Amino acid sequence: MPRAQLKRRVLLASLLCMLLLASLILSACSKDTTDVVVSGSTTVEPIAEVAGEDYGKAHPNVSILVSGLGSSAGIEAVGVTKTADIGTSSRELKGSELKLGLKVIPIAHDGIAVVVNPANTVRNLSMSDLRAIFAGKITNWKEVGGPDEPITLVNRDESSGTRDAFTSFVMGDTPFEINAVVLPGTGQVREVIRRTKGAIGYISEGFVKGDVRALSINGITPSAANISSEKYPLSRSLYFLTRADPSPEAQDYINYVLSDAIQEGAVRDAGYLPIKIKSGDK
Image 1 (cartoon, helix red, strand yellow):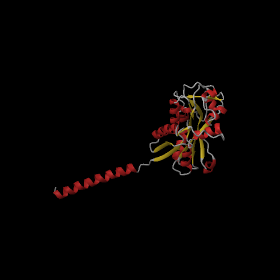
Image 2: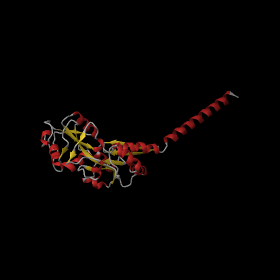
Image 3: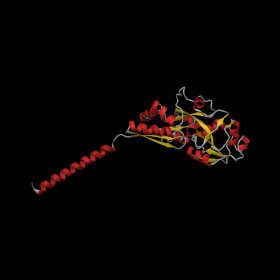
Image 4: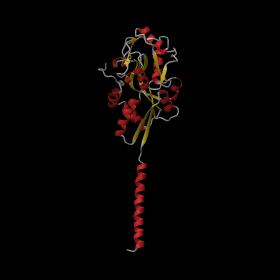
C-alpha cells in the first residue's frame, strides 16, 4: 500500500476516534441533571439532608442541595430572591412574609427545650421566671432555687426561627437582655452551655444530648407526648415552604419527606416527631 494512502487511512481513523470521543463527552455533559435547592432553618437541616441523600440514591438525576442559613434566610431565598426551590423554617410566617404567596407544608413537630449545664441543680422554671431570666431581671440561680451562681444568658441571633418562636412563646413584648451571648447556630449554643456551669439557653428538643439538660417549664417536660399534644408550652411545627408552583422534582422530594420512610426514619432519628403521631409516643 502506498505510503500516502496509508497516511490517509491513519488520519481518517484518528479523526473518527476523536469524533467518537467528542460524542461521548457531549452525551455525558448533556445528561439531564436537576438541582433542587433547599435552604433555611438549621433545625430542619438534619431532616432535609438525610432525606436528600436517600432521595438522590433512588433518583440519580436529581441533586438535593441543602444549606442551613436560618429560617428568615430560607424564607427570603424561596420567596424573594428565588434562589431556593424549597425554604425551610422552624417558625410560622409573619408580617410581610405572609404576602409572599408561599405554600406552607408542616413536616414535623418539635419543642424548644430550655437547656442548662448538667451540673445545675435547677430542674424546673415557671414561664414568668424564664421570661425574667432572659430579660435580665433574674441574674443568679439562687433566685430560682438553684446554687449561688451568676446566670450566663445564651441567645440566638435575630435570623433564627428558634429565637422567633421563643420570643413568641416566652418573651412577648418583653425585650431580651442585651448583654446575652448571641450565637448563630444550635451547635454553638449547646457547646457554650456544656462548657459553662451557670449558662442557660434554648435549642430544639431534637438537639438535646447528654452534654446539656432540658428543664421542665411550668412543671411540664418536653417529652414526645407533651410536644405532640402541645401540652408543653414551647411546642411548634417545622416547615417546608415553596412558591405556588414548585417544580416536579421539588414536589416529589417534598412527598418523599412526608412519606413513612422519612417520617418514621430521619424525622425520629433527628429527635423530632412525625406529623402523624402514633399512640405509643411518650
